[in-house]
Image 1: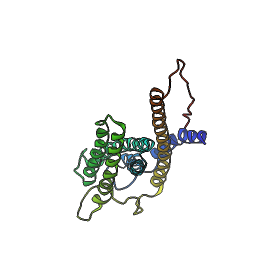
Image 2: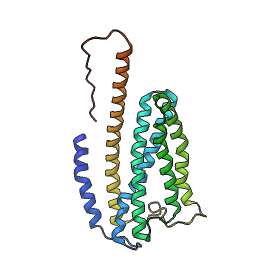
Image 3: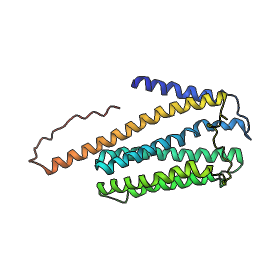
Image 4: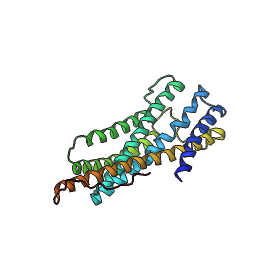
Length: 240
């Protein structure tokens, strides 16, 4: 399964990229050839949404159980989500410059997503404010849960309010405006980015849980029972 995934990513990503270059230009854009940035822009907010949803769920599990492994999972999901949030902002800004002539249009969707970026950047700033792991995990979990509803509103509700006017093409997928080769390439890249995201998340969360186990083992070794001159080394699997 791992070999199949690696082969799929190694071969699929270059092929999907080439397919995106060769696909027929989209209509309705000032510079149709540069509209291909959509292929890589679109998966970013989708992946961020799934990861932030997972982060909120894992945060709830931590509050219910106080098991630090849930905090590791939540933080891993939010870290990866923050990367996709940043990529969404960056690719959106360049798309705005190419198609509309300015990096920043004060478009409601741009502004609302900038607020989302600020909110979740604050999550990581807040984590650094606590040296005690339990306080850090509890406050981070509460923050993630409270931030999730504003994220959903700012991302999916506010830009679509009838009184809000914006340049962003809302409902491109739902209205069936994405057709032909563009739809095919978008689906290809969406699948590949999803596989890559799942793989990276598993690596990050497993590394964090391994670190947690090592730290806990060190605490137990320092605080319980007599010590020996020769430390005991236990093998821990880190395979993905």
